[in-house]
Length: 323
Image (cartoon, rainbow, N blue to C red; front, side, top):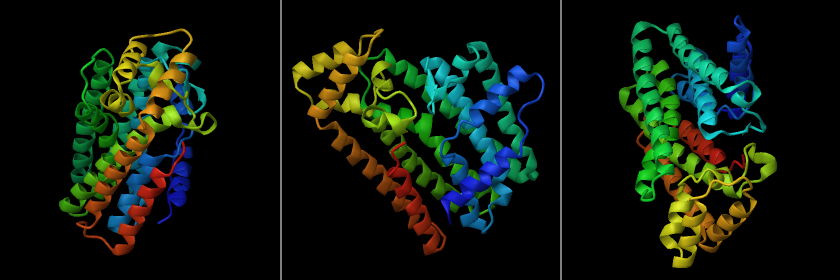
């Protein structure tokens, strides 16, 4: 089971689709965001799960594409909400076109994502659509909580973990379960691979939070320090508030009340406090915790040892990324 092979297969399937049609101003931004690259982790998960449970992944390509189109739709709208200038190192859709185009093209992507399920028989279609609707709504719940947290000063770590579960993890989990549904495996296997994805998704998002502050600007693809600029109450910030001295707490609270034109001092100072509180190590502990929780579910899965090892090595590959 080769991740690069799934990526390659998915990309050639993606390339075979002609995205640009009339009106061009609606479809060109869709083509643009879908061509921007990235590791295509979610569609790879769908193909991988289908392969594990049925020894073939080809039939899962439409479901994988639905997941990728939906994921990119959320990015287009998230970037508008965050006023983000960059996505994967390139201009965001609303920067390259305008906000109205970003909203409408995003809407069209959500509808396109659903259309790919029409490739399946009614029983499979129904299961996919049901899971997809539940997941899409949860992603909206998570996004709203994320927005709400920006103006709240009493966010707990538990609330934050729940928010990233909704905003990020459920889609990773659903991507895997969709592969299981297409493969028509047992419900138990489908639910276990969902739980595997849920915990892996939490580890993945916590690592994203870590990289946002401590990543390499050349490989990260987004603006390093973006979460600090946006006053995002990430695990790093919440944990720092919990473990820091009173003077550092006050500094953090002060910086997170500001929306500045020039953020360089803010990023340097907040990063320094994080380092002082040993936040990088504490975040890495949490990443390991959720990665191991994901691996624990593998023992209960009714699949070969070889496939369990493949899923484990995928999890480790995901956690060793620098992008």
